[in-house]
Length: 386
Image (tube, rainbow, N blue to C red; front, side, top):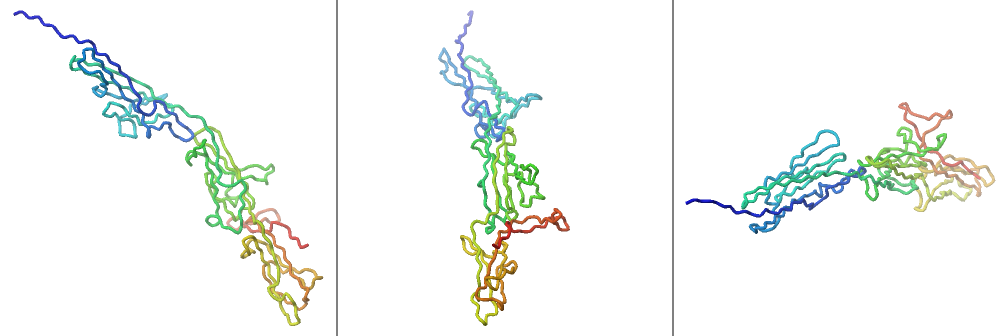
């Protein structure tokens, strides 16, 4: 028997190969001000899913997506700098570089730094057993990052433009008062490591009054934080201090924002009063009288007023006599040998300043043996007895 064979001829398969983005974005934006990526692939990975639609004219296999049936699947991600050598990334767990899942999709977790391009390459085969044929597919794409340069810098000073510091109150620890400031880009508050903050003071003693840097040695009211978002001042040394805070983004543009506040020692409304503790009315056997001074405000009597005021008391035996100064204090006992029923008590109360260096007649400042300035408190107004 002579034999002659034939063969079954299949019509060619029809393929539609594509890549579908199912999460994240191929292009990122990097905000140099905040140091943030948008989208951040650590939070929203960039996911690329291969799709292979196969259509068999002979009907031996149903039409459908056979991407999960592909073999010899290779995803290759290469980080390419503007200059220098490229780096082939290694597949890793979530949150580092990338991972290929069971559906042959790649999940990219790496944020691409500015100046780099990530080249993503895909290679895979599809084998059809009925035809005993292998089909090869490949795909590639560059993933990059753009700089987001738009900035809208502002500064939030957490205090009023004029801050009245009462000497009768205590602020913070040991009368150390904190003032906070925050830099914002738009509505976003920048973290401490994303911003640069500087505090200055307005100096009227300069030949041309101007803002100047804080001098930790000579600005006695300064405690700490002149280059941070939280400056601490010593209330005991503040008479009138004008502060300005300037802020900008650390890695952004040169755009700056500033805000100012005036800190002042403020007593509010107060009233001084003088009188007799006893022996207001003199009799023949009256030997002594006692006089007092007190200061009141809206809260009532101020305790230990001599801590906050210079109180000088006066007395005269008769209404027509000259006033005699008894010195500074709030209580005096007086012999009444020459006094009449018209004897009188008077006083002058003046606000005391914050602590300030003591200036000698030659203009030098008084200091101790270690060179530390010696400070005192002084009346803020001239004495008036009329």
